[in-house]
Image (cartoon, rainbow, N blue to C red):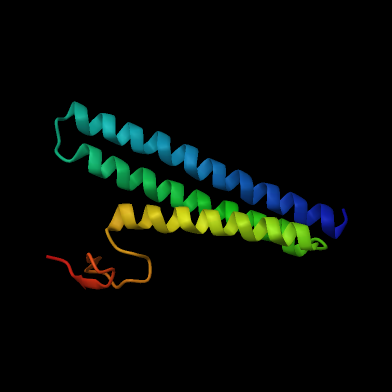
Length: 125
């Protein structure tokens, strides 16, 4: 097995792990939500969204890692690096948006702070 074939196989395996993380996370989140609904526990929707969001974040991180492995490790061309940069930018924006939805703060903000109207963090109330 050549280096390129090995790197391709690793990239596909990490890709598959990303897809599994999203799909399995969605299934588990749904099972937990249905169980909470059946038991009439509170805040089902909020917990479901957070669990699902975390699963998507994990999957996105794995998919970005797979793209980097395949693009950088095997003879990168200007076109492949440009495509990788676009993919990473889009997925990073999605990750930040999901993080803001899940935690109520940007990834670079300390815990306990939330974005204010002016965009700077202020203590959560």
